[in-house]
Figure 1 (cartoon, helix red, strand yellow):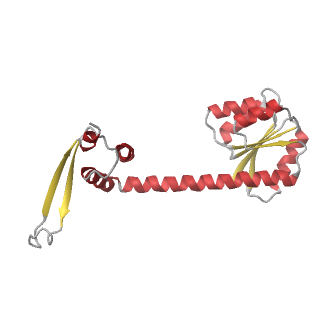
Figure 2 (cartoon, helix red, strand yellow):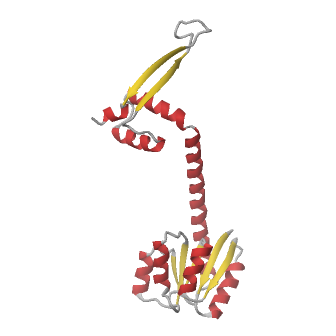
Figure 3 (cartoon, helix red, strand yellow):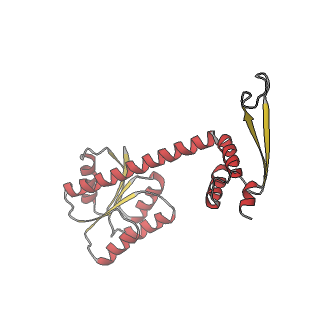
Length: 214
């Protein structure tokens, strides 16, 4: 369920939007109602909604000015502006602030539902992308030592470009100016040694990555 904050200085419109959103069957939860720009700002900071339905002309703080302040705090949310003002300057500033939709009052239910549906789809995709990134980061952390060993071995074989070396060093937490040792375990059958023996071939890699940049 995604959280919605609704902001409008007209009580009748605020109540109507609240009822409409909750009856749409989109899996949305209205977590707050704000009647002016200052209240919207404080609720957005504390509630961290996924979606903000925002009027422009409100007391104490213009809706778009309030949104600009929220952007400075890096508070991420989808924003749908619902306003009775169609002046170009409002629309231009809304576009600069990456508003997701700009609807004019009186907004029809099918139009609002359609816009909300698109916003929800974007949120679902973003959450899935974030989940996959977290999974990849977790797997990288678990296999970091092994991947670092393979990477250093492959540097010796000159299998990476300078740009790739820079990127992989950063990902694996490897400093190119340090000294590393690689241990390659050679199968006893291939090394012609007895089965009970273990033969270790050690490669000392001193500044291997650094030398590639020389």
